[in-house]
Amino acid sequence: MSVECPRKSVLLVEDDLCVATMLRDRLEARGYSVGHAINAAAAELMLGEICPDLIILDLMLPDTNGLVLCADFKAGRDVPIIICSATKRSDDPIIGFKLGADDFIAKPFSVDELLARMEAALRRGPTRAAKASRHPPGGQRIGELVIDQARCQVTLGCELLHLTPTEYRLLCALASRPDEVVSREELAKRVWGYHDVSVGLSLEVHMRRLRSKLNAGAVTPPPLVTLRGFGYKIVQEPRAGAAP
Image 1 (spheres, rainbow, N blue to C red):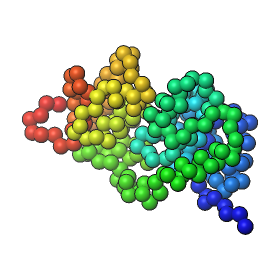
Image 2: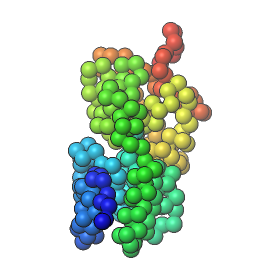
Image 3: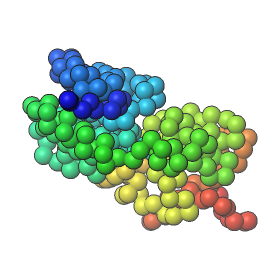
Image 4: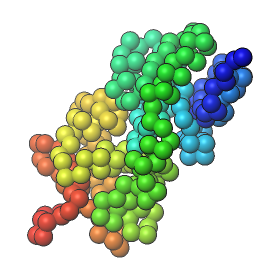
């Protein structure tokens, strides 16, 4: 008597319809519930709808580099990611792992091998109960700022902030270590996967915009502090008289 896999939800991000159809049929035959996104925009919309237990991610998407999407998916989430790609760039697997991917499998691949890797990733991953205890319904709170990582939403007081994905990732990176200085290099690597002069300039622009959005409301936000030559930090409990 065969033992069926527990019904887990999988988000498949793949622009090749032939590959996607084949994988979806095989995964559903093994008991998985599969949502398919043909590009990054569709994947970001679908992510909040199906709350997947695992993501299968192609890197060569028509609208976004899959490595950027990997960083987006990992911002505040514990969902395992398996990259499946025909990329010829030798450093893509390394960058993928640094951005939080749990596994990498090169195309063409054996579906049986992919299924085995999926099962291993799901065994290693936290249970739904563990996720719920780690990220309670109220989300992560710093003063009046609340980051709802399950929905990728940020509220300040009662106001919903409309952040770009990059601004959201920057805020999550700083909020994960409140009152600690996060270097510019580390922030760049967590958001974009690498650091160079151009990324450093972009980082300053995004930080200014993030700070402006936080300060635009009626509620005082936790300060985002720039430490010249070191990096940035978000202050959890500002001291009286501290400079903004």
